[in-house]
Every structure is written in structure tokens, then in C-alpha cells.
Image (tube, rainbow, N blue to C red; front, side, top):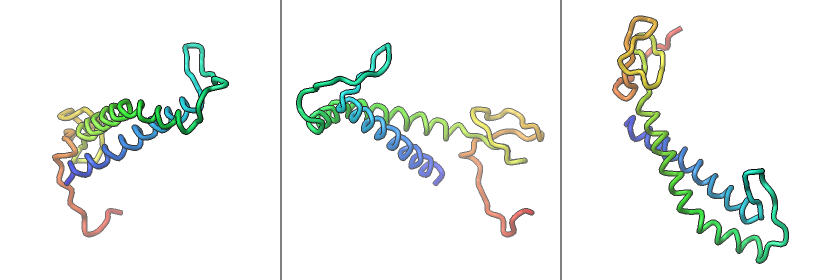
Length: 123
């Protein structure tokens, strides 16, 4: 169950990021914005209409958006799988499995911890 939730969260995060990059770059390029080493500039007197350029640039930019989606999903999932927690004091960390905590406990992967809800909340 934890893996499914982590994969769903990674997919959603990557979809938002990749989709935003795809739409943003397509709109900027279709509007005539060009980036160079000196900065950004707007081209004047572009042929054709905005929507036609937007259509073709969206098709051309789709492989880049798919690449960004896959990259972000992998990165997000890798980070979720590397999250650790100290069972003694509930301190969270990342990429420190097996190291000792300040309370004297040891960090374990969060995916291996079984969570049980308390009947009465702690005060």
C-alpha cells in the first residue's frame, strides 16, 4: 500500500511539472519569446498565427515533456524510497538508513515501518 501511494504521488508530481514545462515553453515560443545567452527577447513580425505556431510547437515539444515527466517521476520516487525514520522518537531523515539518531535509536527505511494508529491520541 505504501509503494502504491508513493508511486501515485510521484506520478502526480511529475505530471504537474512535465505538463507545466510543456505548456509554458509552448506558449512562450509560440508568442515569439526567444532565449539567448544575453537574456530573453520578443521577436516581432512573426508569420502565421499564434494558434498555428502553438499547435506545431506543442507537437515538437511533446518528446521533451515526456522526458521531463519520466525524469521527475524517477527522482521523486527515489527520494520517497530513501526516506528514513527513527522508530524510537519519530524523527525523519533521508538517505541515512542505519545511522544512529540523537535519541539513541537507529534510522530505518520508512517503507519498512508498520504504522499502527493509537486508540487514544497522545497529549
